[in-house]
Image (cartoon, rainbow, N blue to C red; front, side):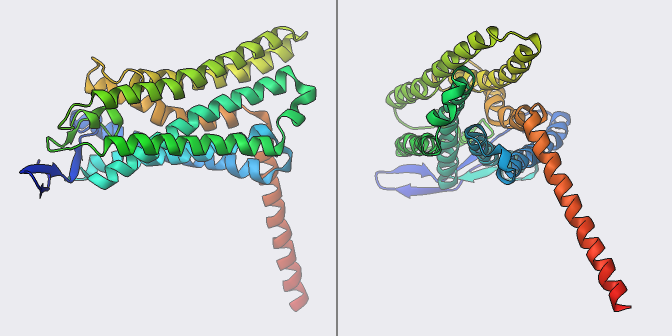
Length: 334
């Protein structure tokens, strides 16, 4: 497989497209299993997170700081998985598994923006739970509407600015071949390997950025959940303690999975892992985490399930009312 090239001054050849290998180096039986699996994961993730957004928006009972951040997270997860999975599915069926230079740059920018934003947003959500459980009487004064808006805005703006700087730096490097990316999307480590120059400075910058947006927010998450666990242990009834701990434990597992795999990839840019292992690690934070979000925050959340049932009953009641109105109208015509 070859790529289209164009000439630039100085007898140097820069590539204008990359080839995304994805999982097509696996045997055909594995590929035939992976395609429907990833397609199902994508559809389920989109529908699940869209359901959370719809329920939390339409049910006035869920207009609280927790569900405001949850709507932000669900929207982010929908975008996050859309940045990578459709292109991955395309590599299974397309003969030319290419992505243009500009499309690769855009994909990296969007993916990195959403990843950094999620790190910050998860830290904010952990703080929200800490205030709710440890300082319930001051919860709505501390987590006011303006405070929630500012926290969410800072997360999104910071993600965009950090990603913009990193992406601009990486794609200002010369890429003169080869152009084969042994990954399923334009992630930073495999793209840097293709640069035709010394990238040690970029690797240090990525590691420093990774440390700032992964271990530090995760430390805030650990602190918040440490205080939450201490508060849980003071709950007198076993039933109440078990209910709060069950919800927080599932949240913490998802957060740990995201931060742990992300830190291993970006804090340690130089790694002895094989490309296939890197792909699996990337799947954990780019595909599995968005998949877990609707499972953790809806199927295990009685308030979301209650809101969904309420909306379904309201919709069913509206249909019955409309049907009854139509029947009465026909009878009057007769």
